[in-house]
Image (cartoon, rainbow, N blue to C red; front, side, top):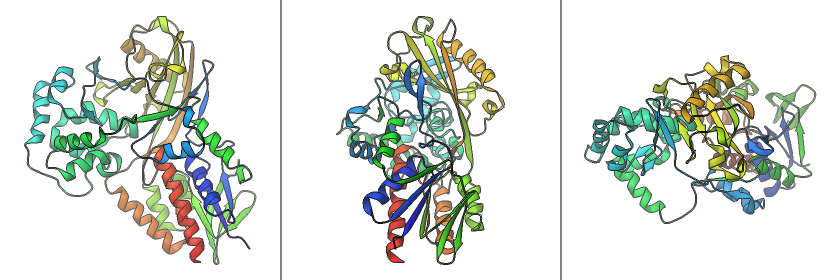
Length: 459
């Protein structure tokens, strides 16, 4: 009799896990359960101004290969596209200032462009430059991003450059985000060199040998990836609208309990957000408690469409970042129609405005109309917009951004040990554990599938 693996969660992680099982072990029975009526999870593309516009992630990073490799395997080479521009701005004292050349995740590696940008004071720029001469003062493991930047380069660099960028990516506060996990490029440079700046310059020299864009997207939106992935799984047992209630040990097997029917299996891949996974694994109290301790942040992404003639700012760049010190509801604005010219054509401008991050839940308290009005007021002032909205859309991503606090990797390792002991055959994957973003989730889905199949082979 064939052995069975149940995959819980139909986002990119769960779909990738199912594909890996199908490819590596066609004889293994695999069932995927998704609570929502649709597949794709946080990847969602829908119509806006007559074009497919992403409601969540609109690109993936190319520094790691997993998303690019999957796109190539699925025949999406021709659909991949890179942003038309990489320049961006930051709002300082209510004025837009262009990010200087030489930034790496917000860290300046060139002195004169930093001074010229006027993003930080001349004294703060000088303080940042001292990094090249300061002794190695690493305090030990589990340092936060903010802690690393503040001790090497000073507070203004941390608050006006690094936190707006990395904090925006993670919807978090960099003073409370693990450096090794959320900014490994910075952490590696700091560990391998006495100076953070010199370490990043060394990395840049190595990276300059390739001309690959930093980000890639898909012309028809990121849902093109998940839809093509689902098509590649034709014939698989995929069931939507079936929320799993719990995973339990039943003799020498595992049981996935739903409202209607229970599924016995030899292995289970749980690819749901950590706070949901905690509720599924209540029979392993220690793992559930640790999973529940992973904090999450919520974000609202509001897409705004204007007539191009009504926007005074030329929008020559990919967007703008808003530091916490500005006190605005807006945390970032992506100039979508500049970043992706195929989004809007010559007639319209499309902006994607983000609100909400760790420690700032104001957006959650506003209904859609009030949220749009508040963000429109802020953005119209910054970008000199006059005239009415042509179209708008609100996408709310509740508890969608896990916060990797210092020591997060040890927490995940402890959860995995708990499960190996109390619930052997249960494997976790997803953004809550070993990396945010589409590539990391793809990789974790593949790894969890491999672990489940290896487990079946040793039983």
